[in-house]
Image (cartoon, rainbow, N blue to C red):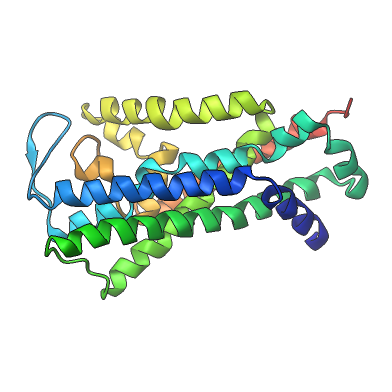
Length: 268
């Protein structure tokens, strides 16, 4: 198993894609966090219904520091999602299965290696938010709460949430084996489908509870911070452990589907 994990991890990091996506994520998250820090420090924000929402300093910091979990999770999702489809595209599955014929082990190795790279993305994205967002808050004379243990707990959980998105990406890639479909689907779902669904459901009396179980909301629940919830556009979040279980359930179900379908097929 160890050899399989090392081999899969090397496949991920010996291409340029992973660091290009990582660099893009860092720059994008730094910009968004800095802008969000400035906007939210002005005292009020406008909710999706047009009402003014006043956030406490703690809520401002939590929203800014976890912005990668709210808006940047597409990056680990894509890098994980291309793990299996890239092998299909470049016809490297045959040597993979020759070196490790147990396909369940191959899937497990891809999940572990994807999760490890996801931790790198999670750490980089979270630190970018803290550096840029916290820097803007400090320049404006606002508290950064970096001396508080609860803040560091939030940062650690944000890193974990983003790592889980890479795991989810690997699982998705075993079901959807087209690189184009994975990338287009990830962008469409994370940037349009789920945000619109969460906002729409949040405007109903019952929809907020349903929206809390969507993967994006579950990821935010793990970190404890949510741009959408703080702005009043959606309903509340699950607890951290509930969000963790929901994310793991998505990973488990999709992995099982991939193992029962794609990974059982003969290589042609």
